[in-house]
Length: 214
Image 1 (tube, rainbow, N blue to C red):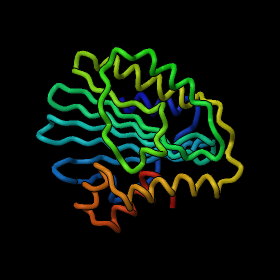
Image 2 (tube, helix red, strand yellow; image 1 turned 90 degrees about the horizontal axis):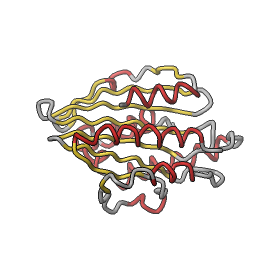
Image 3 (cartoon, rainbow, N blue to C red; image 1 turned 180 degrees about the vertical axis):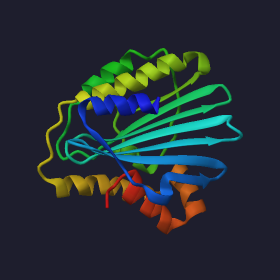
């Protein structure tokens, strides 16, 4: 599915793959991560993580968009396949200089109310997480619907009427504040990386490769 989402982005924004060095392959907490990153001309920074573990019984795909050139919210897609279960978590964070109309994403969500909602729990970033975010869980039989939801939701995000960024410093600070918050306050995946790589290497991975805020 990540390849499908990348292709969707590429239709509008030319992608150039970046050299991620030693981060291209990481082993963390029994999972093997394949990491790649891209510069999306006119949009910003894209990163992808494909993870497998538990003898192939668990697979996790992540795609993150850190907009720098257009005033969209930061976008994070996670898909977890494990033991016949399919989990979709797509979160948007308030990193816009000006308010952006996200109603197109809400219309997409309204078409998939038949998919079971997942309780996302409480996190430090809830105050900046937008209501157009998604948290769904399903069985393998519904994966095709989950795929359609993910694709249509991203398409609506890319089609949102956002303005071109003129104050790149202000935009950069808003994106960096979210990443700094992850590193300072932690999170499910952040804590796993910190435990294995240490705080300094995790900070470098997040700021220089996954989100490119430094």
